[in-house]
Each structure stands twice: as C-alpha cells, then as structure tokens.
Length: 52
Image (cartoon, rainbow, N blue to C red; front, side, top):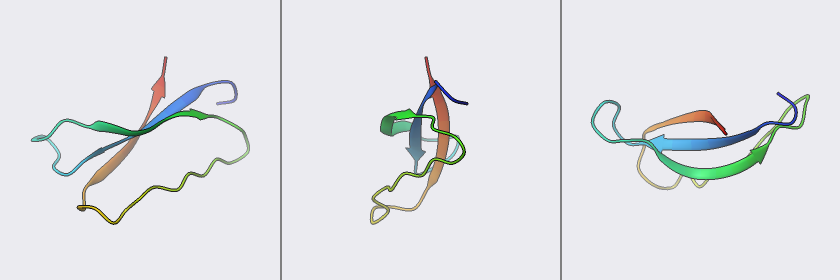
C-alpha cells in the first residue's frame, strides 16, 4: 500500500531456521514495486513483511 515500507526476509529452512532480513526500507510505490536480490547463495524461502 502506498506510504508503507516493507522488508524482504529469507530462510533456508521453514520451521527450522528463523527468517533474516535481506533488504529493508522498501517504500511502496504503486502500481508495482520490484527489487533485485542476490540469489547466488543457498536456496530457500522469501517473504515480504511490513516494517512498522
């Protein structure tokens, strides 16, 4: 949503390892936001969370 900030978080294993922030302070700018992440490391899971 416009005016909010978000973070991208990563974990290599769901339920085993905690999520760690890999990029934060992403400002929502409608209609679409894109970010580039370094994906040369281990495979895993990403999520987007709102920064308050």
